[in-house]
Image (cartoon, rainbow, N blue to C red):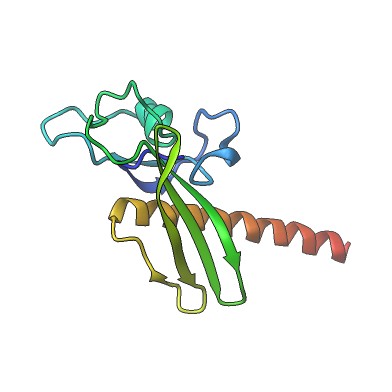
Amino acid sequence: MACPFFMPVERLEGGAWLHPSRLPLGDGWRGFCTAASPDSPKPGEQHLQSFCNLGYAASCSYLPHDRSADAVRFSIARVSDNVIAVRYVCERDHRPGEHGTLEFVKAEQRWILPHPDSRIQRMAECYLESYQRKASSSNSVTASAVVS
């Protein structure tokens, strides 16, 4: 469950997480905090890893008091030959709130049902990228085992 104010930019290789494959967006991500005011110091790498990538950061000094969500959770709802459906749930106080399904057309490499919030949409893109990378890697391992 990533922080709903996190805007991921690039995959973070070699972060300090014990189990990086269990991270909410499928991997660790570098990015920036959209809740931080322009005149405040930017959150550092440790802050991004401890709070932004994980959500439920009650002790985060950037987290607005008035917010609709504390974290966003993603999962793959459905995979067909041409469409991947990504389910999302925005949570507040460990309870589900806004939720829905975003759809990505593989052949066209575009979202046909994107999220209107650019942060949540970007997180969904990151989650899908991590999912596809891992699925591709898993298929390569399976294919090489069959050939051997």
